[in-house]
Image 1: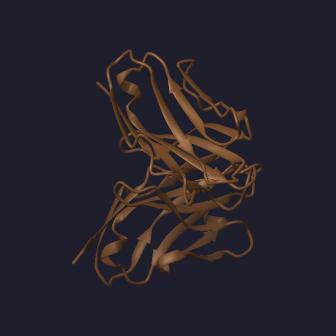
Image 2: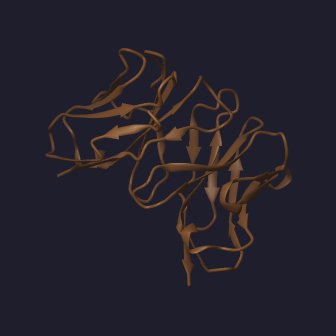
Image 3: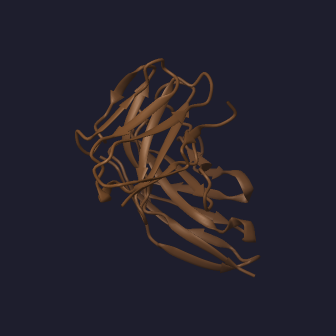
Length: 115
Length: 114
């Protein structure tokens, strides 16, 4: 596609529920990144995929968070037993190759609200 | 480890006047530095990037930034603000070796008054 697409754009869920957030990167981009932006803060790194594998998942806050990219394209961020503190905008980005000096293309994000 | 400090959380200017958004960084390596802009309900957009080719970097929409190693600064400027410049601006440093892990500042909200 022309840009990075994230769905849904908004998600409201109850505390304790499971949610999945989807990211469609730009076609042909092998690298994919997830970031989380809490209210009033800059985005924070969660995980980086190179192809199908997670090259760095050091930013995932705990084991309730998990992400997959089974075919090296679309990625899903999964959050189990959601907590109110998980409320944030979840951003996805992609780049043509791996580590790059030239910035990435970000999607518009999924705003997750846990009530 | 790297970090970024944006010195102002909010900057307000009048249309047609200069813009200065301040950023200081800390990096163990020769840094890659970026400025991103985020308009309401829009994705992050890359304004410009510094990757050691030139210390004065020109970006989109008339923005510039100057890398000053002695001051560890990367301030963003524009000679004349436009109403459409109103947005949140983030100064960002990339990991020295790989650059895939971006560290964002907390952001500066730019307001442009008519």
